[in-house]
Length: 143
Image 1 (cartoon, one colour):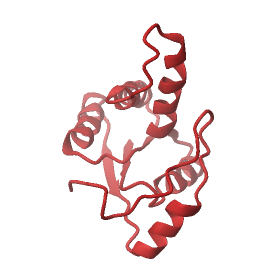
Image 2 (cartoon, rainbow, N blue to C red):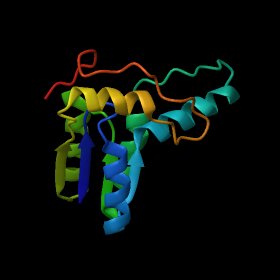
Image 3 (cartoon, helix red, strand yellow):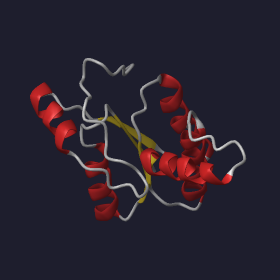
Image 4 (cartoon, one colour):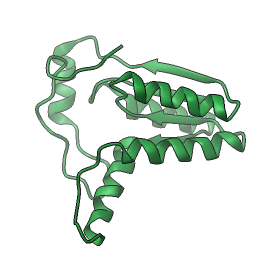
C-alpha cells in the first residue's frame, strides 16, 4: 500500500508520517530529505546547480515503486501542492498493483500553524533551519 501524505509546510506531515511508519513498519519517504541530498550532491557537479525542481519527486516515485513491487508499505511525505504530483503517486501505486490512500493534513488553527513554523527546527542533515515565515495565506495548495 502507498500512503500519500500531503499538505502545507508545518502542518505535521513529517511527525505523523514518521510515527505511522514506525508503528506499521513502513518505508518512509520524505521529499525534503531527498531534495536536500540532491542539493548537497550539486557541489560535486560541474555546474554547481543547487536548485531542485522535479528531481526530488522523480526520485521518490522510483523508490516508492521499487518498495511497492516487493510488497512493502510506503509512506510518501511531501507538500503535493498540485494535482500532477498527487496523480503521479497514484499512477505509481497502480503500476505496482498496490492500493493507495491519500491524506491531506491540515492545521485548522492559523495561529497554531504560525507558531509551528516559527519554532520548528530542521532535522534534515545539511539543511539550514526552515524558513520562519510561512502561512496558509501565502502558500497555494490545489485540492
